[in-house]
Image 1 (cartoon, rainbow, N blue to C red):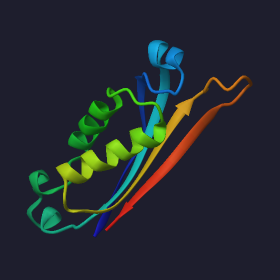
Image 2 (image 1 turned 180 degrees about the horizontal axis):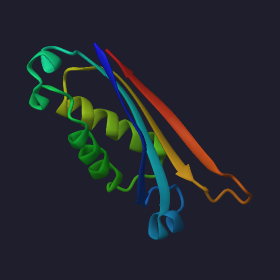
Image 3 (image 1 turned 60 degrees about the vertical axis):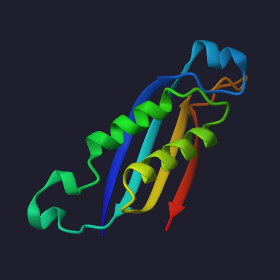
Length: 118
């Protein structure tokens, strides 16, 4: 088993429960902690056997383009898409953060963390 961490993936996206958020967009950050089976990745030095973090980024970017009302749904979409693409993933933690959410006062960020465990 080994863990891959991708931290601070930044996106401009159009998620939010208010129509204005879905029209103007906001800044988001995604961080992932993926635990997967090592298999023969290290032994064979073959990226095609690994959970390729370039592909992980592309999957996350694709999911961030799908407008949702809640960041909980965004996080679940990311988890579902990554697990579908990489069935060897054992555990996955996904943090989706909305930077400076419009809450009527100064708030730096709001995050949700979802976990998938097999």
